[in-house]
Length: 82
Image (cartoon, rainbow, N blue to C red; front, side, top):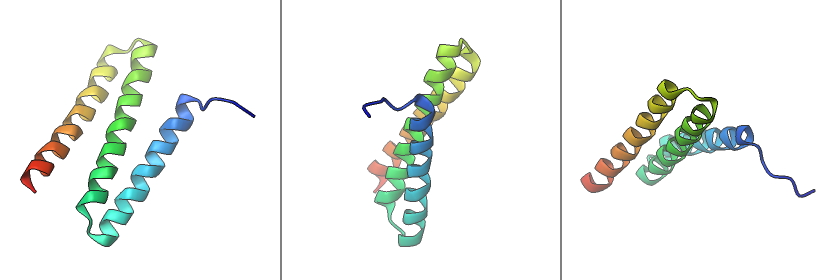
């Protein structure tokens, strides 16, 4: 059984990882786990942007792309602030 995961399965997996890291970060008060949750969310947004690009929707593509870049900027600012 050597099948590749579909893009929807990867999106669900990234969202699930984001949820788990968010709950763990909140429960433990860990900034590191919070950063991992934001990275996972950013990856998920970039995947959504890629899906919109393939569909030919440039408005939704740029929307998801800017959200992903914004989250990376938040991670960078938080990293340098700590």
